Image 1 (cartoon, rainbow, N blue to C red):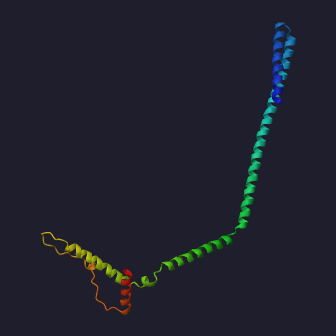
Image 2 (cartoon, rainbow, N blue to C red):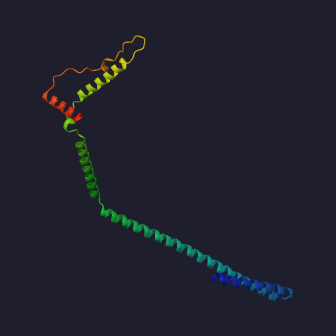
Image 3 (cartoon, rainbow, N blue to C red):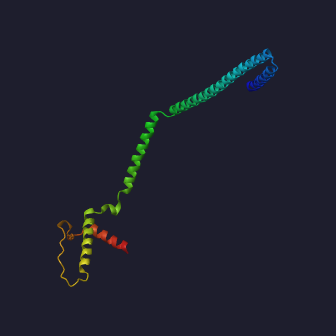
Length: 191
């Protein structure tokens, strides 16, 4: 509405200028001055309308900013209320209790896995020292086989093995009844 009124006033001011030119041509100075006075009044009204429009635009911008501020505050309130409700539902004692339960279950699972991985039956009865001695004997036998392969015409040089790496020769031991029974079972299983 203000813009339409401004256009009308601009047309009236332009018309007054045209009238003033006509009166000036007709040498009617007094009438020409009256037209210019009316033109200035119209220009003052146009300026006022421009200020009114500026105020309206300023008010619109302020309202948009206030609306954005209100929406932001509402969103923050909603977020705070939701967070408060979530904190009421979960307190630190419940979290500590849950973590203790998880740690207890983890420890129980480790104990179960450890129990399941412990050898049982015949595997539990193996003597690690005997198994290491048998392994060293196998390594010694393999070394002997390599040495017994066809030799070249050059004389064989003696091989010096460090004292800690000497192939262990099993010391003859007397077998117990349990060991005889174990050997018999192993022989049957090999069939």
